Image 1 (cartoon, rainbow, N blue to C red):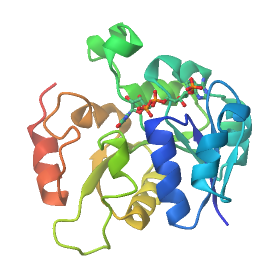
Image 2 (image 1 turned 90 degrees about the horizontal axis):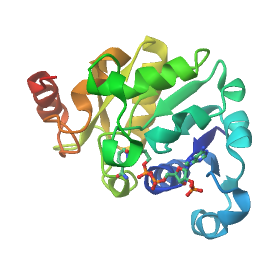
Image 3 (image 1 turned 180 degrees about the vertical axis):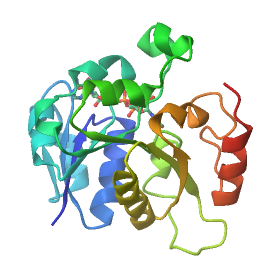
Amino acid sequence: MTTIGIIGAGNIGSNVAKAAIANGYEVVISNSRGPETLGDLIDELGSKATAATAEDAAEAGDFVVVAVPLKNYREVPVGPLAGKLVIDANNYYFERDGRIEALDNNETTTSQMLQEHLPESQVVKAFNNIPAKDIPTDGAPAGSDNRRALPIAGDIAEAKARVAALLDEFGFDAVDVGPLEDSWRVERDRPAYVVRSNADELRDRIAEAVR
Ligand SMILES: NC(=O)c1ccc[n+]([C@@H]2O[C@H](COP(=O)([O-])OP(=O)(O)OC[C@H]3O[C@@H](n4cnc5c(N)ncnc54)[C@H](OP(=O)(O)O)[C@@H]3O)[C@@H](O)[C@H]2O)c1
């Protein structure tokens, strides 16, 4: 049984957990306030879900989804994620996260920031481009008409292939944006951002993006 560690139990974390459990995974999920505050969510998710600290979720996961507000990314535990695939759902909302000069100046991307924080991990951006509630509900079998596509970005081909396979299980095509440095193309205010797209439409919208 494969276990997905989830750091952040809000909109994205809880909906990734639902999709994961529906597809046969176990999840170990965490928030900032401690596992004792996650009782209602665990009741909802059922016996395949366990609440933990962020450190324990990172430790338990065969791979790990990071779904905390960007302003908290430096709190993500580094040691237990070394050597692991880390899926990054982050987006930059200055109203929530405060101004981050390197992003405002287009010198980096949110996922490059997380990769720098987790130098021994393999960061792949995914799930940043879909309203959280659609993750467990909008999937469809491979080959379905107008199947929704989600972008992925990362620097390691093998890690991206694993995430593409996960998205396929969840019911989505994956469109490769390129390395983490190109992930700005699917962030907030770009043409592809949270617009429901099939793979062809998503490729077109990614190509239209201007930084
Ligand atoms: N909402 C969407 O539809 C959506 C779509 C795509 C991407 N995103 C992006 O995904 C990220 C998460 O968004 P969200 O909407 O899921 O946020 P959210 O609903 O506010 O949930 C954030 C979660 O992160 C937890 N958290 C904060 N600091 C933590 C830490 N140091 N360790 C462990 N957990 C921590 C919070 O725990 P506590 O409650 O205990 O503080 C909460 O469970 C953001 O960057 C957002 O922009 C969101």
